[in-house]
Image (tube, rainbow, N blue to C red; front, side, top):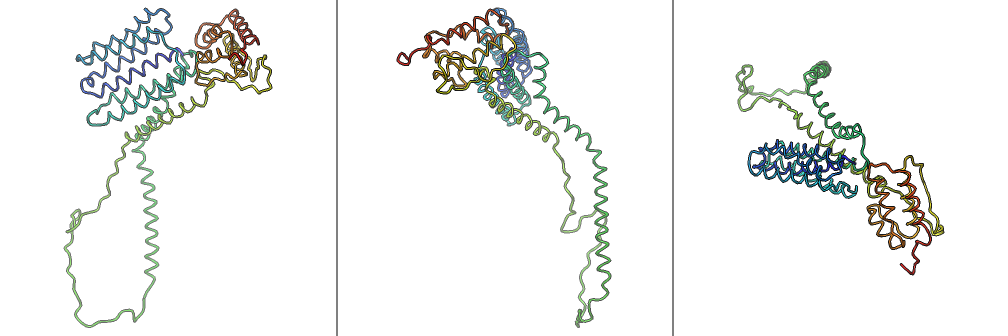
Length: 408
């Protein structure tokens, strides 16, 4: 979760850099626009644990160290705006985002990065840096999506493994292509052996038919009819020297086949990366119970269920106070479902509180604040806070707290 904001910021800046490098005034300054997102990523990773906004603002100015690489005023202005955005983003401290919201942003970023990479192949925008910047933008967006799915901060080993997933397939394809390229000289020996076998088989086949046809001595005495008259003569062509072309024609030569290994390797790596992107996006849609907006699973209560009881279905044994508090919130959602409040999976906790206000006389703001602390914060949940959450849930679930149908 902590690395999500840093990766999100880097993906945004990389997309801007890729688009800028398509145009002439900025194309020569691609080192500036490649270094600036990298410094922003490092600054964000260092600033996210800091609670003081001025300190985060100071760390957010780290990308400004890349501005001396600008060769002209347009690049200097664009780089300054990007560095200012980084500082403002870190100083604001709004790093929490629902998974369903960022999934849309990630899809837009990846689509724009793909369009930018395609435009870089046109004559008017031809350039190599935009392609790599667009590719880095897509990778950072996917890594940010994965970090947000994990919920809490993961160990560095997990973060490195997440980055390795995206590099494994392209690097594996590159390694396979390099191995095939290196083994090309060695392939001539098995090809020659196969050619010798085929040539021997063809020679045996020709010899067989020659012997079969040669065994026919005569076709018949009346097959040929002698005709009177002079024997026609045909002009003979002069003998050709070895290597000379015959008149009126040309020697037929087999075309030399040149295999574009680099193009095939790039296409294979792109297809592998596209398959990985589609798999991750589809996997994210199949697991909504782990999203930040709906970290729960609940089942509607039947009509005959008692209205004053909390139902605990499929409850697993929690391990920590954080897990216990999040389990209490799941029970609260089941309680609300008994009275017709069935939130969608895309709804936030604030929207659930607004829906519950139509059913309950007391607000659940305190209980919601404790749940958000357990869901998003890295601070441990104390036993006192857990007992407070249990008391608040019991108070919210009282029959006296439920509005009567005529009062709704």
